[in-house]
Length: 299
Image (cartoon, rainbow, N blue to C red; front, top):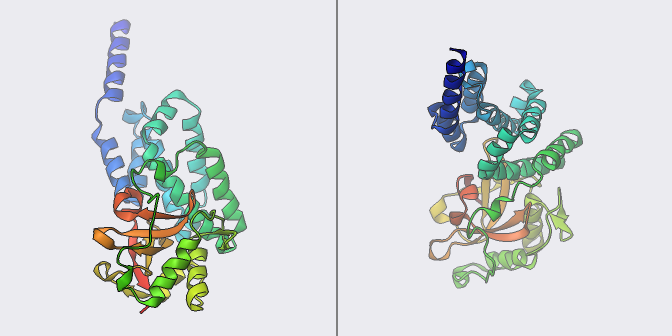
């Protein structure tokens, strides 16, 4: 009898491990849609339910949702242990075979989160919160070591051999100047809070290019640049305008629209992994789903 019961438990465990579980599918789907609060609530319920003790997936999504939500200053103040809890979970997953299988099979999610955390660290350092910056940097260095960069997974994301935009003849002199100056710095490395050609972060780069070409002083942070720019619709965007991104916790990144020729939407920006580079937004699932809007400082 005991042997039969043991055999049945093994069979059920194998069935659980190999079959599709709708609760887990819902977690993945809602995380992909950016519903992080919902993912956190649902993952906690699954963790508390003994029926799902056989899987680390609820813990995995609890950690990821917590790291996404922590990028919101108000949420983090209300959930002071969130970073520690997420760190403990990811450390646990990295420390056992089943956990490592989950991490390996969710590489894209981790790569996207890694990029979000890098951008968050840049914003936090710019705001002068050195303690939080070092905490995020430690998470990146210890728990995301070996996670590939998102551009390595997004086919055709980067434009390897950029030329000046094909529709440049229809642009104003000011826009041409901005694009020429922006292109001069291709290959310049990314630097946390960098503001000059020795190294740029995203908003340091955009503010430098605009001042260098048009002697315009604009606010240093990406969110401030978004707020002070003239908002424009996607169909009105021209090369030289700014494009802004939101990772779910507010404006976190900014780039300069480089080309809209032939239906493309290319930007030149300070990438945390590639430095100053050009990316085709429409070919990058990471950037495409995070576009928050467009703004301009040009006529």
